[in-house]
Length: 61
Image (cartoon, rainbow, N blue to C red):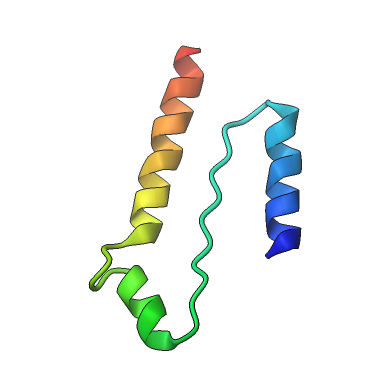
């Protein structure tokens, strides 16, 4: 996970594009399923919505 966050941080530091990072850290398949649409809602969908909002804000700025 450190490589992922470091790479995303490097891209974000360039400041050319808004960047969203969403990584599900789970210990079991049940946890993954719950965070991907069952009990905890769909976190991936939340991250996608955030990315769209950031892209739209970037256009305004």
